[in-house]
Amino acid sequence: MLRKTSNRKRGDFVMVTVDLNCDLGEAYGNYSFGNDEAIIPLITSANIACGFHAGDENVLNETVKLAVKHQIKIGAHPGFPDLKGFGRRKMALSYQEIYNAIIYQLGALNGFCKLYNTKIHHVKPHGALYNMGAIDSTVAQAIAQAVYDFDSELILVGLANTLLISEAEKIGLHAASEVFADRRYENNGQLVNRRENDAVITDTDEALQQVIKMVKENKVTSRDGKDITLQADTICVHGDSAHALDFVSQIRKTLMKEGIDIQSL
Image (tube, rainbow, N blue to C red; front, side, top):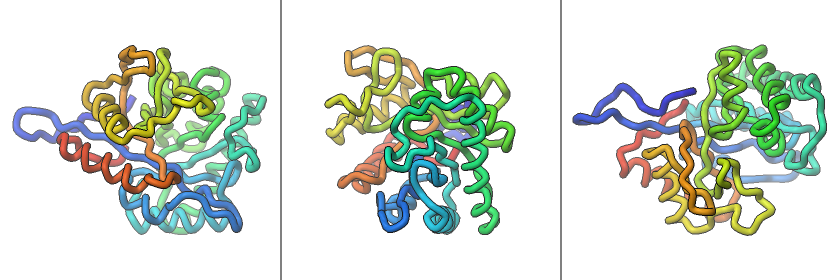
């Protein structure tokens, strides 16, 4: 598990650090999605779609180029082969099929990274693949093993306190625990399903309070009022909503005001 405390000190305390990540490169063909150019200067890690749930060869090229320009860490964002469902629908794939899908998508992104003399830094599964990996050991093992076999130095980003983290650590893969600024949590630490009305926190102040509590106290309050302990190595922010830029800017400002250093994993 990655630690979010650095060795740098201010006065008598060890400085707390956290990464800000965002899913990017999710346009496809003539269809635009998100606001990548505006959001990327505000984050420290980019999770780039690899063509299965979103993105294509042209979008991959442009997104890698953009990340390199802003010196942002590049991550793969592999999903199920489900363009129509944006990778958010469950698919009953075997261990080998999931393994092969991860390798295939990492290879696609890696090709464009080589063009710009850079490399993949981390891997964060997308959508249904991410959610299934959090609770299904076979899915989590397939993801972790594929990432390890592709490059054992990569970091696997997964939902805090789930199988994505524990299965990665079992095989010696670096894992980073992810938390969400604007999502509500169940008592078991899972995210509230997006289909439910209260899944997303729409009040900015509430979301900012949640972020600070997760990073500084390693706790989050579930929608039922239960405090859950979790590790917060990286915060997922979204760049595809109407107020996304303002929200991410406020997160950065709040973190810095609290003395929290924002840096990549």
